[in-house]
Length: 251
Image 1 (cartoon, rainbow, N blue to C red):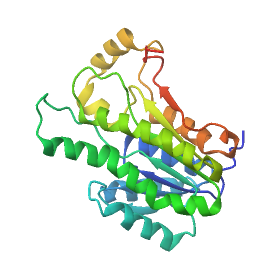
Image 2: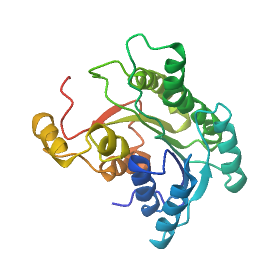
Image 3: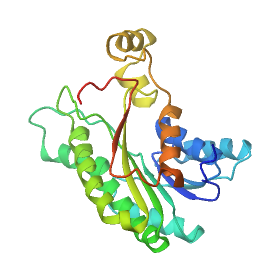
Image 4: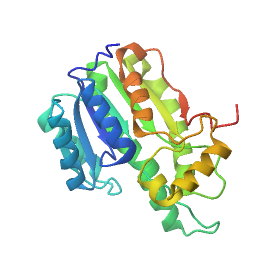
């Protein structure tokens, strides 16, 4: 199936590794001109080289830290200095923030800065251009709403879900869709190095919790992103979708 992404300008945050890296590679293979954003420029440059060697357009590399409140505006300036528009925005940057029940305000502020405020500010930086062109796709990579302990990221990403639903209603008339994808256990730095650092642990967790029986790969998220970014997905907006091999249990 041709997803009609050739020539589309796609910005992917948190693109240096894991899910973001997989999304950038898949969108590039579908013909999009990608802009890859992260703090780690060496990893971004390596990814850009891989995409170029695969015969796709070399991504624009933008290194910045989205925890800095000025970063979204700086990123947008760099992108618009190179391209006259942005068609696709994938808000993937973020990270788990386990917190004690009486965590200090500073810890909560930091969790929300990267997991909610950065998502909102990056979106607001690119949204006017999408509205002018009357076409756009915004995908937010979020997370589970079934935490087993206090985690600042879960609270912030729940905020993203509500904000994204409202935004989807406001911009639908402009030809812009807004959706959230909720990964389960996907091979990434956070999963493979911190949460489940051994093959034995991953196998035991999958057998006990994942009906599909295994952890997913970044491409399992990336292919869903590519479809939602397509003109063929024009009637899908304001949605939250789990991609987790059936792990999510509530209806």
